[in-house]
Amino acid sequence: MSKTELPELSCSRIVELIQDKLPALFFVFSRGRTEILAQDLSREWDFLDPEEKSDARKIINAAESEYPGTFSGPGWHILKRLLYQGIAYHHAGMLPPVKYLVENLYSKRLIFVVFCTETFAAGVNFPAASAIFDSTRKWDGHDFRILQNREFYQMAGRAGRRGFDQVGHAVIRIDSRFPEQTGFFDEKFVEPVSGRLIISPNTVLSLLRYKSDTEIGRFLNDNFKTFQTRKREKELADQIKLSKELIVELTSSLCRDTLTLKCPIERARAHRRLKHSRRRGGNKEKELLKRQLASFTPRKCRETDKCRSNAEKLNKLKIHINLLYQEYKSVTEQVDSTFREYGEVRDILENLGYVKNREFFPRGLFALELHVQEIFVTELAFSGIIEDADPAEVAAVLAGVEFVPGKNTRATWLDIPALREASQIRWELLSMGVPERFCVWSDLPGALAYAWYNGASFNELLEMSTFQPGDVFSIFRREIDLLRQIERAAGDNLSIAERVRAIRGRLDREEVALCF
Image (tube, rainbow, N blue to C red; front, side, top):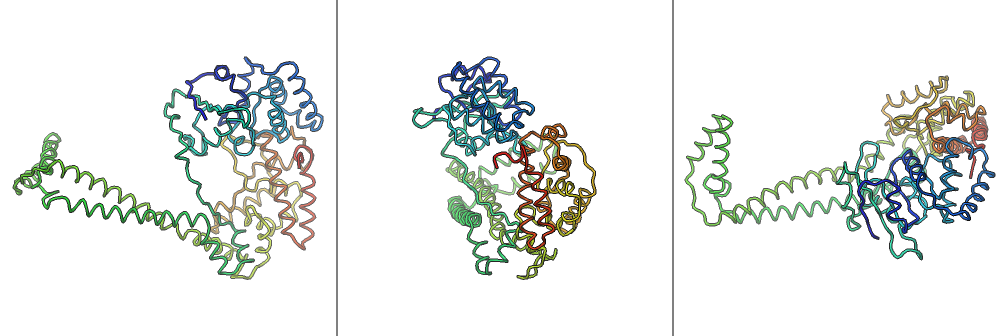
């Protein structure tokens, strides 16, 4: 793969420089910016000839005929114009049929430049001749940071089509404000994969229900996360042992007067401190240094350079071993973290009345069938909200399960009893010590679900909020999956099972039901 770094140029200029290396995936770390840059490029470039435009028109017309509601939403007329020019954008805020149309046109070589977010590299296998980076800085939810080597090569690896290109090309647009953002990516230093075992309430309940104590111990002990932690613990222990041996070796090479004021090196340092104290006016420090210097007879030494070098090495080594000790302590505490986390979640479930040792109570059996926010959803069910509240209100409550609002996310405010009660349940769980990660819920999507249940159109939902179409679609698909889980968890309680099945039927329609 060849890599090119370009100064801050317009998209049009970049495409002009690499026009013999198309098609290209233009990676942008902002949904809105993908659309802006695509429109900017369309003002100067049209990649399709009349025959190709005709082929594109047939594919677009077929998609519009199959999903008429989807291709009438806001922004479609802009994207449609771009597609006829061989340009597109692709991000998670788009409805699946629209994304599939872009992917279909790209696979048929009717799109030459796609402005896309990094999710395109993660989930869609469409290689290109070139991968262009609008920037190598991204927002990670807390701050802007440089891409990791692993992230860069995941995206840059899309460049180079088997059977078409001898080499793939990665092009990086340099932002003059951040000159450090490029020039450092190296496949030799791709970050290692880290083990990550999440102990959820369902994990604990499933282990208690289906595994023996021996099997539970093996599960908690023989996982990738624990393996990596123990491996790192051993590596650090070996490094500490080696550093100690080097410290002993270096210390033995120093004469007995090293680090005392008999040593010429230490006396020179003391004189520098004395000179510095005079400038600052530190009388007490000055008098102390004078007395210390006078109390030692200088030693003549012919190996001051060797001593100075070894003393510096010894000092650096001591700093290094202190850092190793700190990391070793942190890693040692993590070795048994999986067992501790398991115990903590089990205690929570026992305190809430889900289980007692191996005995399962009704709440525990219900939560056993859930795989998202098990405790919060179970408490919703046992509070009577799902069974007794108005079905549209139930839809509003469940839409917010595991939803985390973005900084600029807005929606029409909905004030209904079920949402207020759900908020109270969440507050009570938190006050009982249930971790916030087990109570992730927001009332923000409630108005959309309430309106959709009552027959609102998809475009009306978009007018009620700042959500993009793909976001609304994702909210409802997650809720529909959750309703299936609740129906399964209800078991013999036909009242709840029939109710959530009916709610699911009302939600799983039109744009939301597409491709499923």
